[in-house]
Amino acid sequence: VRAVAMETDRVRLATDAGDITCRAVVGADGGSSIVRRSLVPGHEASHVVGLQCVVASTPCSAREAVFDFTPIRHGLAGYLWDFPAPGEGRSIGIFVRGGSREAASYLKGNLERLGVDERALGPLCGARVREFDPRARMSCPRVLLVGDAIGLDPLVGEGIGTGLGCGEVAARELVVGFSSGDLSFASYRRAVLTDRVGRSLRGRRLGQRVVTGPGSRFYVGALWPLIVSVGRSQALGPA
Image (cartoon, rainbow, N blue to C red; front, side, top):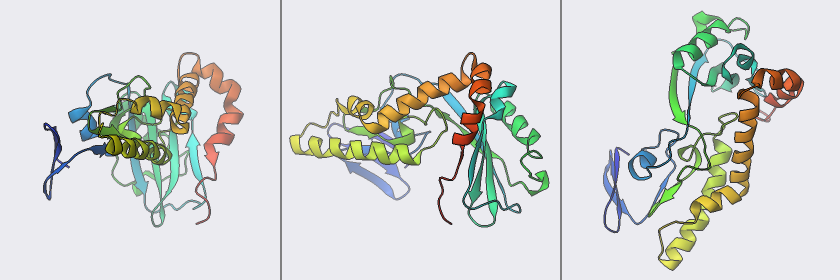
């Protein structure tokens, strides 16, 4: 999708395959959503920076995904991650509130601690994306946003569960809208926030403020064993 525009009774999408018109659009196009930027203006939430590189020659356990919140102890509000990557390798990255220069410097300065040879690194890539904020708009007439297009999980940046949860809410709104002929989607934001996915996102937003906000070093020090045990998960399951 290259561009999105609202017409009288349709939404027009300019794509590489040509123009498409439709009665309603679901913007599931990620944290830098062109649908949101084009059609759903409004409250500007805060942003986070995510940087990632792939270490092709250093395999890790296929069952383990690590969230390392050590950056908080050094004044960076966020965490390092170390996940299995496709093939024989690892995805190493950092997710922080702050500048990309500081994030890149901290990441490169901690490679040895993570057991990574800098010579094995692939290119460093990243993006600045919007966090979830319950005050932000999530729809407009003929448009629904889902997943990271609404806003990134404020605590750990996880997007798959949020996308699936919002997708269920959006599907119900579409069924009601097409059945009634009312495609204003005026109740969508409330539906998201009162659904399990919205309650989870609001809880994670609160958790992010506790872990990375004022007094975070005290909280992290007090809660460090719990943070480590939760962050170091076996969530990927069998290989």
